[in-house]
Each structure stands twice: as C-alpha cells, then as structure tokens.
Image 1 (cartoon, rainbow, N blue to C red):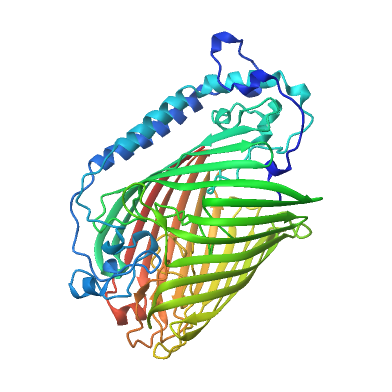
Image 2 (tube, rainbow, N blue to C red):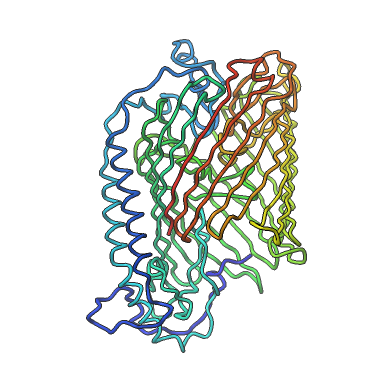
Length: 606
C-alpha cells in the first residue's frame, strides 16, 4: 500500500546537467533514441485540443446569458449540504418551502451565506485568458524539451541501479496519488509530450523533483422536464481548469498545491458555488513520511485536500459537478504490510461564487478511522474496508424538521476481481442524536458483474442493488433516514435526480468494449421507496418530494446510455443520454412528466 515515492531511497547520483530539464537546443546535441522520437501529429493535436478548449471557455464566458427564470419550488430549495433558506426569504415568496432541496450539482445557496448571486452580472475573463496563454506557450516547447531531457537522462542511465516505479502512471482525479519518480530511470522515458513536466529534478541525486500538470474540462448538460416537469427546459455549460504543482523534497517531504478555475454559462437558474467558484485554492497541503518500522511508514498531511474513500458512497470528490469538494483537514496514515489505516479530522470547504472567498464550513465537521487490507490471495484488486465515520452538523434539515445532528457510521466493504467476476459489497449502520431524538439508519449496497473476455466486445453484465433506510414516522423524535454525508455526484446514473436515502433500487447494466478506445454502456434503474412515510431525496441529502400522504412505493424507471472515447491517455470525451419515466409516487405528489437528459464533455488531463 506504500506510495512509490515513499519507497524510493537510493543514493545514486545523477550528473549535475540533469538538474536543468529544459536547455537550448544549440547547447547540446539532441539524442536520437527511438523511444524518445516524438510524434509531430500527436504534438500538434495536443496543442490544438488545449488551445481550442480554453478558447471555448473564454468566448462562452463573454457571451453568457443575462437572463434567469422565476424558479419553481425545488430549484428554490437550498441543499443542507451547502446553505439553508432563511424564514424571512421563505415568507417573501421568492423562495420555495423550507427544507426542500435541489440536486448537488444545482444547489441554490441562500444569499445570507454569500454563496450565490443572480445570473445578471459582468464576468472577468482575465483568468481564463491568462491560463490559456500560459498552457499554450508551455505546450509549444514540449517536443524540444522532451527530446533534450531524454538526451541528458541517457548520460546517467548506467548509474541508476533501481528506482521506485516501474511503469508509467495513469492520470487520476486527486492528482497527488500520482508518482513520477520512475522517470529517474532514462530507460523509462517514452517520449510522451507531457513527461518533461512530470519529472523536473532539483538536485544531483534526483530525489528532489517537481511535477507539474493540469486538467481542462468542458461539459454541457440539457434537461427537458427537469424534476418531472418543474422546469420545462434547462441547459447550461460548465468550464473547469485545474493546474497543480507537486514538489518532492527528498523521499520524505512534499508540498502540493492545486488551483481550480470554474465557470458556468447559459444557466437559466441561479448560479451557485457548485457551478462556479472563479479561481480558488482547491488543494494546498504539506506532507511528511516517516519510517516507523520495517515495512511500515507513517504519513502526516495537513492543509486543504481532496478526500475519497471506498466507492465514494460516503466521502467523495464530487467530481461530476463543476466544482470539486475539498476539505481543510489533518490526516495521519500508516502503511504496514497489507494494511493501510487512515485517521483524519476535517471540515468541508463551503464553495461560493467569485474568486478566493471559499472557506471551511463552520457548521459541519467529519472525522474518521478508515482501514483497508489488500487481499492478494483472492486477486490483485481485492480488499476489505473497515471504517468508522463521525459527523456533526449544527444546522441539519430533514423531512421531520431541523436541528443539531451528531451521527456515527460503522461500515465494511468487500471488493475484488477474479476469474472474470468483480464485486463490491458494502454495509453501513448509523446511530447518534438529532434534535433530541435518536438516529437509527442503515444501508446495504451491492455491485456484482461478470466479464465475458472471449466474446466479441468483451461484454460485462452487471447488477447493482441497494436498500437504504427511510424515516418510519416523521411525527416522533427518532430519525431513521440514512445520511450519505458527502456522496459522489450522479450517484444513480447520468440524470442525477435521486440520491441514496429512503430507497430500494435494482440497476442491471451492460458495458461493451467496442475498440481499445471506444466503450458503450447501457443501464436500466428501477426505484422504490423503502419507507412509505418518508419522501425521496437528492444526492446532497435534500428532500425532492415529501411523502405527501401517498401510499405508492414505486418511484419510476430510468434508462442510461453512455458512449466514451479515449484515443489518448490524456484526452477523453463522453456523450450520455438518460430518460426517467415517473411511477405512481411521482404522479401522486406533483408534476409527473418524463424527464430527458443529454450530457457531453471533453477532458484534457496531463
């Protein structure tokens, strides 16, 4: 479970020339190693994609609409995860019923928190233009830099006995989990245009180095009959840029920083801190790794950071919406043999519109002990999670009311792959206190599939099923509604209308690997209420539809189709379509038109 950088401890020296990654071409002869000859077409395509993406960002920001619609009931609800509606605002008639919430990626905070503002405003485009210019100039010199770095590395290849990594790393969502120390070995260089940015040595040993990278995403989403007809049409665009720098000072100390620039265009409803946050510090932390015993390391990390555990059912990055969720946290992690044990205390960052005004949430805090054991005897991707998560919210809201919430979660997850089978099984139990009453809630989740490797397109046939508790009696003090805490975005498919509370669902799905670059997946989802005395909720824990006296259990049926294309490791695009046909409960409690959703995104990540 140790990271590769933590395991690196070699005293081999590299020539001083390797400390300068980018030297002028005339100062030394370029190496002609076959593995380091760059593909000109790939280079031109990479520069075209980055520059075009950023041009779209800036042009769209300048042309964003200045109109907004009168918000229907649910879009005027504020998520208890983000902000709450004041009683004065509710009486004023411009806001919906208190306690009714919108999905995580469309949360409408209250103005008293300063997290949202009307769509009509003048937006600065200096930040996107600056970022665009910087990245385009950087990519324009990457072919020369890669070739020269490779030439310099060849001089020292014989002196390197071993390095920590043995293969190129995949680009991840958290970014700080990536390790490029393997590039200390010149034989590991492939000539990829992004390699010079991933390993910039700062001393003769090569143990101190700098890694640079970024992610650029454009995403557009369109709804017809959002929330089964509460909003006839809603379509908008999201733009996101996330550059980062990872500084390793030897094998034991690192400093990591990442900015986020996030903007929204064309929204017909209020723009919130989950849609747009301007330029903000997404991550900024220091980390030290200490060997405490043979085959055991202690890692201490403090600062703003992204946290993600297990299947992200309880603690996630919120990667799908435009603004990721980060925490101001202190974390200690022990890696020993096949175990990794994390413990942390954190406060979630409250995202607001405009730049450099995000800070941690004064009302909410979370703490945890999370242990994972590798089960290599079953398969290389198999393991067992055991965890405790504590959570406090001084201003929590549920269907039965609002108050102080102290909730404890005990859970376990068993996951793995072997002989074509894959599985992910998890059980959670929650207890605590809410506004003078007791909390007793639970959830069982499963995701099992089989891949037919010898068949055309290697189809994977899977079945996902969940049972998640709801409140039995909203009129007493006790609360049985499960709280998903900080779940992933788009929890059940692309449309994101329903979240993991008071729910029973069956989710058969099929994935086809059409080519090495192209995947096609389809799914059907059937939803029922677990408790007839509780409503249905969204991803952020907000109430979508109260029970309203309905005795119908069936919520509806959803179908998803997603086509993904990844021609290069650093470039991907996706097209998704989803349709939700309402069931009897939706028909009993409000608008009940069929909801349709289309989403498209393209991502450049290096």
